[in-house]
Length: 227
Image 1: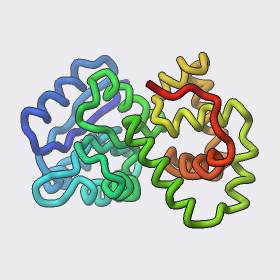
Image 2 (image 1 turned 120 degrees about the vertical axis):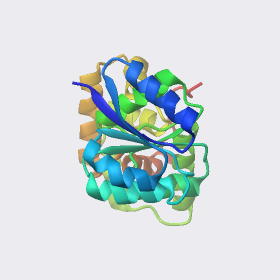
Image 3 (image 1 turned 90 degrees about the vertical axis):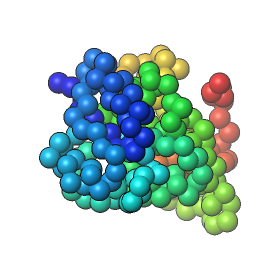
Image 4 (image 1 turned 135 degrees about the horizontal axis):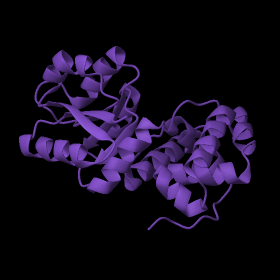
């Protein structure tokens, strides 16, 4: 069964390149190409893609507003932003609108396809420096408020291995990279992430990263820094 993908991108050459990348990859199929949010709103619900690649800077409605409106119609579809914007405002606006991933347009083809597979499997792929900005933003916000005792307690309930997996997620690692870094299988990674979500009482990577940032301030990591 192929992972179906729709693309919302106003740059026609870029849109065609993305569609070609998707269609050439085993296990993927591009089911829609749209140059604006307005066009996507009219056509995309009938396509029912598993994943949508969404630009932010589009003519008319923005990609963030597009995610907000389309997510309401397609709650089972995963939205991944593919954009040039790296600032915290765009990142958090997109995540709050319902995006599950945030990638920069210079993302290589192999990493992009891995990210599509990741989000389809329940992950929240982010370019590594985007994930770092998310962590830093949460840490700055936390410096101005008191830590919640319940949040610290729930983080402390994680096993050492679960904390390692969560930290790698926070650093922007893809599931495949976590498998390689910790020498564990994909099903094992999925099991750890499910347990992390249950113990932290969260439903997404960004929420888990927020609680991780609380805990990590007082618990420095022994994991190597990602190159």
